[in-house]
Image 1 (cartoon, rainbow, N blue to C red):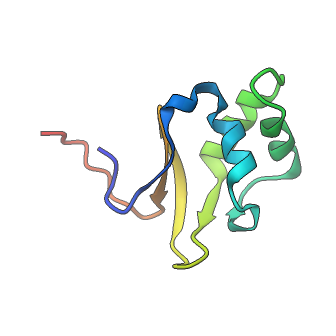
Image 2 (cartoon, helix red, strand yellow; image 1 turned 45 degrees about the vertical axis):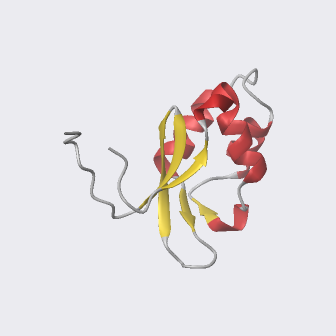
Length: 95
């Protein structure tokens, strides 16, 4: 179950283009943990040889700071792409 306070960033209907959409739409000044190569790989799209490796790095390293609240988020993908508060507690009980 996605933690409370999480924000849906991209619907899973975007499929393999979610990483490219993220790179093209996120306010980069709010993102830390990435380098220029990550952005270039993602912008190139899913046919680029490093696209998925860079996306894996993004999912594991990126932190996004909300420009209005200062809240820090990590990324989580389960078909949809979510911004999850960095200190969120995950509830594995789906009952």
